[in-house]
Image (cartoon, rainbow, N blue to C red; front, side, top):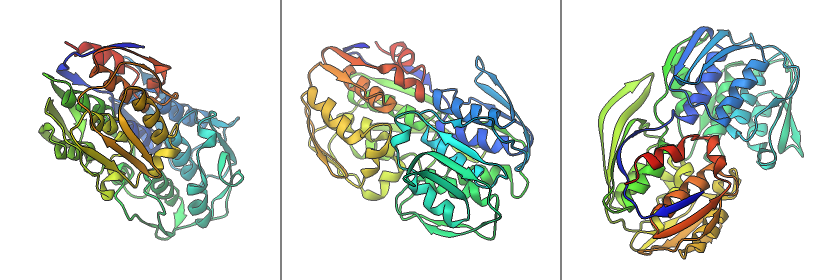
Length: 413
């Protein structure tokens, strides 16, 4: 991918549906009774893996790709059928970790596999609490995929304090609790996204019934254009119908704290999720230190926050973000390597980054490490650099935002 900077971002855009909400809507719709219709669903590589896993377990799911609509014919929480082969989660950690919670309550054996990247990501974080609940789950070295799950006599609710801030771990436990006896309580020291809790409440207690769901635009996907419009002179954009769940809106708080010009209008609530239109225009940014309590609200946005910091005045310090090492790639290492190629003053910490901003950086050749968020963050950085930059392996954006570059070209002036 060749990107020529500097051009302003101007116009109105809509972004794909939220990836986290899309995963959860498919999962709960598949174990509900009756039809669930999901509008504005994200049909990316990750969410399609979730859909295929449930199809393998006998759930009828129809996809209308043109309208971004999915219809699910659910038959209840115990209606899943034994899959005839391992369930392939691809690159999707959300699929594997959340599905493990649901499969832990089934009366059949199953195996969850993933690609090379997912197979290196730690799964002991779900194996430990699920085992405490009575789930019979095993991993390689009891830590890595494949995950093998066997029928259990009975699951019991637990009280569990998350050792790390992880919505995926929390959600895996909550989904297993659907099949357990007694009360389950998850304690988190730092706030993480609460889409699972909101959706469980929306589908109802006990026997879930099919619902109509509208998936808001994904704020993680919006974050790239929020930062782009904030750092590129003369930019002014509107991003329509974005999810502004307070457990996910840390990117807005951070860019505002850096001096960004952002406002939200047309705020309303749809299927338990707040949604609004985000207006962003260029404003000189300044470095800040991210509070540790906000990290769980923007862990996926840190790569593009690093880009904002690279062009800001002063120093930005990001700590308590060690989880970045265990994503599709080590995102701390990746951002240091690639932004340094541009001439950025950036240093890796054991759990974060220190970035001393500069007014301008240099065009260069960059690598995405096949990580969708690294690819999009570097693309935004390239837009704010005079000259042509080249980025390899950008097809990885299909994991979360298949039409990212089409949207970007549409609003470049």
